[in-house]
Amino acid sequence: MKNTSDNHIHIVSFDIPCPVNYGGVIDVFFKLKALTERGLKVHFHCFEYGREHSERLESLCETTHYYKRDMSFANFFSKIPFIVTSRISESLIQDLKQDDYPIILEGLHSCGVLLDPRMKNRKIFVRTHNVEHEYYKYLAETEKNLRKKLFLRIESRKLRKFESILAKASGILAISNKDYEYFKKSYDNVYLIPAYAGFDKVYILEGQGDYVLYHGKLDVSENYNAAEFLIKEVFKGLDVKLKIAGMNPPHHLVKCAESEPNVELIENPEDDDLQELIRNAQINILVTAQSTGLKLKLLNALFNGRYCVVNDKMVEGLDINDLCIVANTGNEIKTVVSDLMTKPFVEEQVEIRKSRMDAFYNPSHATDRLVELLG
Image 1 (spheres, rainbow, N blue to C red):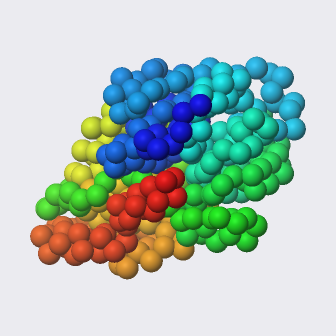
Image 2: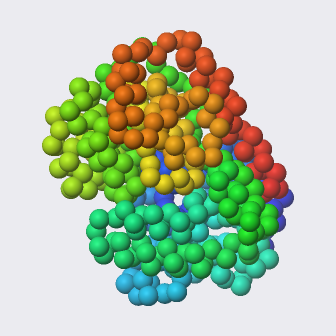
Image 3: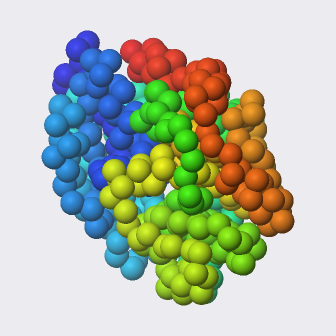
């Protein structure tokens, strides 16, 4: 068995993190990239279920391993959450057994590893992306499809019971202050490692755009409900263009967007195209009905966009220090949008954003702490 003296680590991911186009994999990919830039040699393990193998990922890693996710119907009847049991793999365990390098498990999804007695004496950290049972409960409440709603309710209950597996980990890497406080109540060795978003410099265009942008993974109820709220409660009848961009919008959202002449739906934009949409918008608007984790799309908008309008749940627990304009009701958001559309974003505002982002978010400090923990 190999030892840990030459800075090797394992990362086990719930998904292939390329393309880097939704919240969970954004944190995985850019954390991986930050660690490799510090000289760590990463052995990357990921589950595949619809995404292709990635040369970009493989170029960063010492080794890359792919495992088929077991989506068989029988897994729905396990006491273990489906997101976990569908990722339990003997091949993964055999690969991890080849050495005693430290391991990072991405999300409760990957924590089937902690169930295996052969992993008992390993140094294993769990990166928590959410308080998963709360997140799934919220998704169940907002899901329109009855079959999906039932699955999400059952999965939430299973996740709540399964969460105690975290007691077996060497440490829990919480993604936000709110999650840190939650896990600290029940577990020892909880550390705050803020989300990785791939940005460390403010890159904002001065001047003025002619549209407002909302973006997100549109097949998630949290996001498609937010998009429909904006269409129906804010932009209906407003003389301002709204662009909605994201992955896999459901049919009811497509129909909703088509009903308003000032709304444009951009389905499955490429990464570069999405970044151009963010930079050229006059306003990036981000609203949510549930406060979970640190929204990576918020960091993207603050590093790359002009005005950023949010509701209070989007920034709950964060010291935003006037980085965003907070508005909650449809009428409040409508008033703020109408006002900001006439105001160019000037050089002085860019410099203020730069200075405040340094204090708000510093991924280099997070990497320092993570390398220390893994050492």
